[in-house]
Length: 65
Image (cartoon, rainbow, N blue to C red; front, side, top):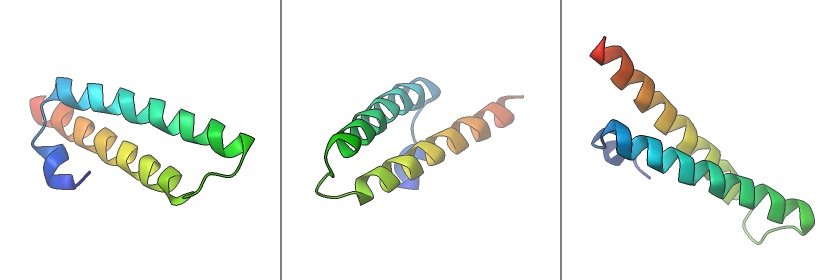
């Protein structure tokens, strides 16, 4: 997910996307712990996406105050 897409989302959309990405990361970690997943860089990209979403949420929070 690109930064432009994240910045164009509303707060509700960001919260929903954050929840789904966190669930996805949890599933990836469990799958990788059981047997190595085919593409382990998915874990890294998922973590970075979560960080981008959290940063956008914080920026929106600061802009509203």
